[in-house]
Image 1: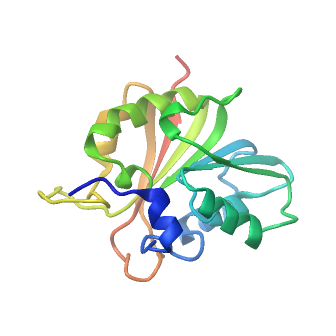
Image 2 (image 1 turned 135 degrees about the vertical axis):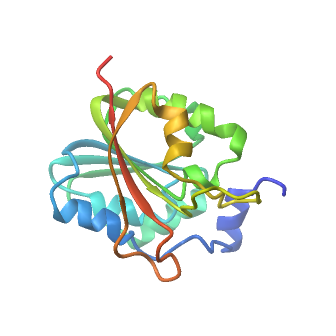
Image 3 (image 1 turned 90 degrees about the horizontal axis):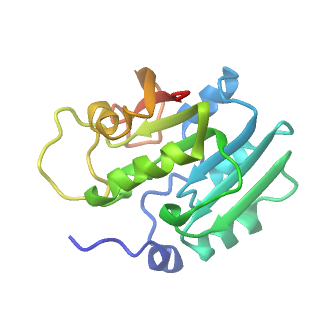
Length: 198
């Protein structure tokens, strides 16, 4: 399968991965006050639902996506959010902000990457998350064991992700998402990782 042209997909409105809202797992983390204040980052943020959900007077939220069309949709739909929310258009693998993040939210981003991009993803995450900061990965579609097949989305699981980031992150917990977008029931696991201090 040829790699997806994400910018063209947004331009054409062909975005079947767009759930129309933030996933319940993120809203639950916030309700339980488990999302750190400070700097938060959402790679592959698409229409920006998670940026709006994370917006808070004590949090500076940055989203990044390849598509200016997705950013335009976000700016049109969301205004007067609490705190500071910035939507940047650019390449995740070349992203070099002037600071590290206290919290990074990855949902339908890792699973959309080509397999050869996973090690570079891990290297960038290791650079972006500050020591003792949190990386939250909502793993979808979660499959164990992983079958042969094509993506995106590529089937993933905790062991697969751990294999790429265990040198820099320690796994705090992994739980099955109790509530999901329709059609994703049983296919999501929330894995929380802490950036090692070294």
